[in-house]
Length: 253
Image (cartoon, rainbow, N blue to C red):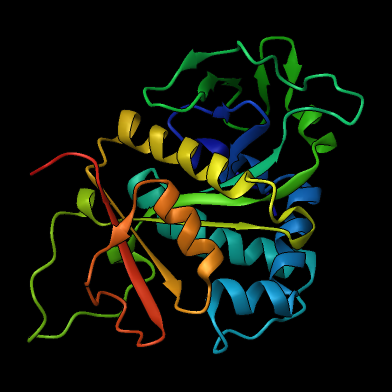
């Protein structure tokens, strides 16, 4: 399966933080190691139970099936429609201490936490490079999870009923989501990646409000959201009794 980056991104880019390289999935989907990481997350009962609740069953998929899931659920429904979606999260620093991408590459994103956007170049979306750094270098990244921002009204939320309250504009309905492999829990990668993609969405896409959902039993994720400035919203967008809904208002309307 061939994916042309130019179908989903106006121009290719990466985000970097102190420890992470954060790559839009229209680029990352072409790298087998990331597809296998994503596949392993959804095959893990512990991860699925924590992230999605008991109703979401872990399942074994082939690499090709996993790519199809990413393509249909993220690239087509998110990136193509709004220019927002998931990012692959990997370690920017190699085991030997060397940097895959220097920390001062690109330009700084607005926000309280260090993150930078690095513009890349490409030929019709098939080959990506950052200066002297080839897209092939991404094959050597150690991927740890994903983080994303998406319009919840066109992706994860159930259909609205006639008696439901009208929704705010889509710029105020941007869902934050993230997941990290169990081998990397407790290291702060989820929060670091989530803050970076939020800063990108706010500065580059004009997002005004972020929302999220967690299982009531997933206190770990709730604490991560609270540290990032989220509060319980009292909304019922997803209509799931087992969940808590959260919001972070960026611009007062």
